[in-house]
Image (tube, rainbow, N blue to C red):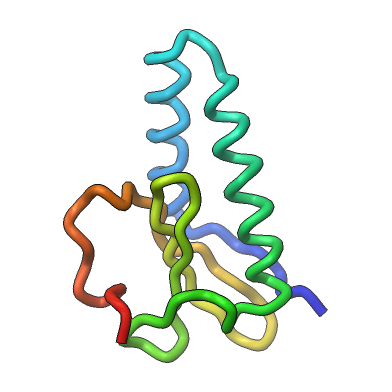
Length: 99
């Protein structure tokens, strides 16, 4: 059974800024649509089996990589909450490094 997906305010704002940047830079939303589709496909897969992702230093927080971005999420028995959506080129946060 898949977990319910939830987005934090922070992750929603980060995703909105990234998608808006690509829309303006490219003059089209083609790349943004592809990025959003890949993100949702990856999150739906993770919602089926959250432990099939990279662990962090916290037991309930894990992460995946999608098209050059790190997606950080927390999960429990009922829902998967996306915490952060950031470029993989940025300095990695120590909390999210592999344990």
